[in-house]
Length: 274
Ligand code: SIN
Image 1 (cartoon, protein in one colour):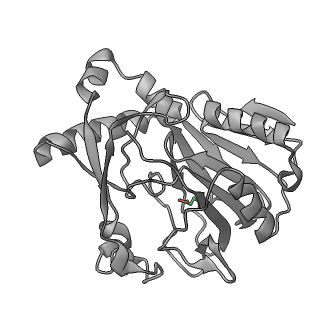
Image 2 (spheres, rainbow, N blue to C red):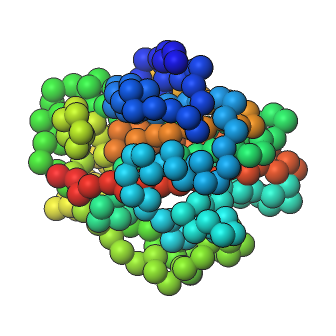
């Protein structure tokens, strides 16, 4: 097995590995790389739904996404699907999965089944590299701040997003909860600090007037959106990406109109963040 860095800020490619047959030593190496790089990419896997679940369960319990359509017979697996005649995709903006939960999912394990002939790449951003590059003044300003996250504006029954999405999300009545997390997160496994706010689900910074909160979030987002913190992953059928939701953002590009794109996603449970 070989592990090579994909970019300075986020991600590593892992080659010469069959995820349906890894032993404990290989898994330990993969886990270390995951903590070092925040996202791992494996090509040419040939996984049944059972093998996809088995790999995800090596990391922890499965955190079932309540809004995505599940794969028939496999409630643990969420479909990330855009049909050829649909306009909007899932995850088409910078976000991190499940930050609206009190205990957000640790990671997501996405496996490609059908990829358009061109386009449909996913961008990743490294939150620890982005934090490290902030100046000391900004780091001091962020110290001890918390932010509120929510999902009603995306998954809620009456949200504009859900309407534009053609009602493809389920369980919309349960899209009501909000959660508060630190703006600067010391990673629960490594202690490395990273930014933990995202344009998809972060609503506001606690204790600030809306204008101040919006301005600070906009400044952080503009910082993170610099390409030097990104990696662009080009999918192929059988590729699997796994990312740490506590140290990365991702963005599924929607530039393949008229083609079908279908991946299966499993989210792995996390721990409370403080
Ligand atoms: C997601 O946001 O989890 C989907 C990412 C993708 O489809 O590339």
